[in-house]
Length: 154
Image (cartoon, one colour):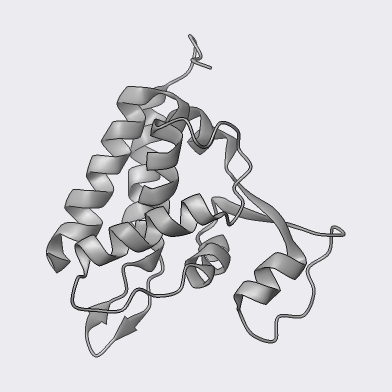
């Protein structure tokens, strides 16, 4: 869906700013790249037609794509398990968890089992989803992530 009366440029600017300010874990001065890698994996799956609606589920396709990208951008480090950014991206404001049963259970620890047992799916802000459906802006966001969030670790 492409909207005729929508300011894609303004929306893209907003989300590049949001992605710039992702809350990323830092250990010994090294920034963890798990969140931008997961976002890039989602965008690539949209680009390739694997993800067709704003309903992101922790599938083997998503996990494989995430792990491959993580290993590409940090080949000397074991990939952070995908369930960590899958859960923790909700703190950045555009990644919305839809809980099974509608209510958030107490989080004892983030794990694959917790995700499978309690999260139905995740959705993005509607504006971000619309932006990802537009190929030019999706590619711009992907390039932004690669060049601004992942390039320093190459």
